[in-house]
Length: 351
Image (tube, rainbow, N blue to C red; front, top):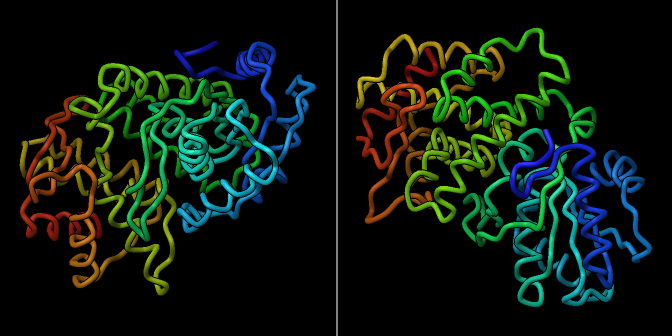
């Protein structure tokens, strides 16, 4: 378990980083953290870095609500005031908000400086680590502003997972479940039996999940076809996440919590539109329900969620495009769904 293209695991990751620092001779190194990773992860990370180059720490606030152009502006100013030039390196140490936002900051500051991602959440390890998507939210609309630009490398070290609350671990598992559903029934079946999971088992599952995503991204780096399959569960999931984020009377959902709902809904829609086997749809619902607490939605809330879907980046020509399943590991792109079926899907989810 050494490396997958730009993704380096455990001690091989730090060897990659230190070789990079020796080779590139950066003028300055900046480490972007949030309040949590500054306190919990930076002390694990810094002792692994071998360099005489000056290191500066830039901290942002924790949470999806700070994944904004305002936060980018603060980081751009910090880089400027701390003397960053085009020969500087930005290391993004954190979850998906830090790696997405930091990648976007690095891609745009002085028309682009080098960056390395060190994901510290399970979600960021298996999802944000691969594919070069960087970006920020536009209001509550997820990832509307951004570019595809790969880091020089990604370092995955499962030691960081010990700093996470259980709900953050579960959030990352949603993307792992998704990788099985769209690409590998064998992997999906492995994910059905996590009760006796050890840290070594988790390392192997992370590695395999990254491998699945990497294979997809290598074949379709700019999301013209195959890469769209990674959006399974995300069309409704992102809209649910955005709806809960903008409504103060609702509990905010983590990304994986919203995507888990989206996958159950997409499973039902797959039965209705593509004759996906009902027993497999039930298996998806039952399995995800073990890890993610059921939410309830009123009819008027579902209506607002449907309206939010119209802003999804994957839509074209006024159509809302879904990724559905003909079977496990047999996804189908660009499926059009009638609104009344979406209401039925929510009824199935909440039953």
